[in-house]
Image 1 (cartoon, helix red, strand yellow):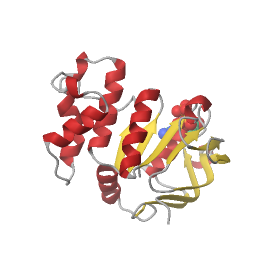
Image 2 (cartoon, protein in one colour):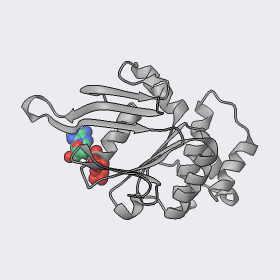
Image 3 (cartoon, rainbow, N blue to C red):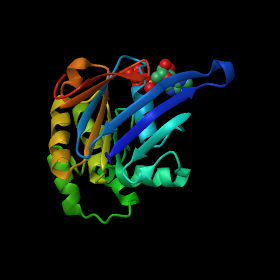
Length: 220
Ligand SMILES: Nc1ncnc2c1ncn2[C@@H]1O[C@H](COP(=O)(O)OP(=O)(O)OP(=O)(O)O)[C@@H](O)[C@H]1O
């Protein structure tokens, strides 16, 4: 059993005859600890695919399994629990709390979880992503790169089994994430519309018009 398995997934938006299929019979298997780029043009369905794996969208057909969660049968509460305990989400659209310090931002999601954490752990995460010297600063004072680093550190602090990463992200930070995740057998799914960025990951799948068009082995 792979860590993430999607089988003949169909997902659409809209009602009645205005409904449009966005994912069309999509099957995907990702092993635990793998780092996979999901590459495709604008509107190919990358964010929709990440939203399925995060349990944020219902399937029209097919099956989606993430670890021990069969999302096809999970309740809304179980999906919320999975997101909180198992997912580390990175996106530039994910807001930071501007008035809170870097430390408070990083600790925020981790504090909601049932896992116990301490300041040493937060310093380790912040140190890895290069923001330890900024822990006492409010995030509103940070530049773009440091904000990306704080978002990643926040995702990592929750010790997720899966990182869902929606580009853009700085290459250096992505490499730090890969190092971090490799040590901990954490899976990374990286959605990008840039082929150059997709090559940052050791494995690539191409999403075209809602279906997997091509598999890359090691750097296709
Ligand atoms: N909530 C929604 N309601 C209606 N249509 C949607 C919704 N979300 C996405 N879509 C449509 O589904 C298609 C796939 O969108 P999606 O955001 O998954 O693509 P993407 O590959 O992530 O694109 P981008 O790189 O531009 O973010 C697009 O045509 C988009 O307009």
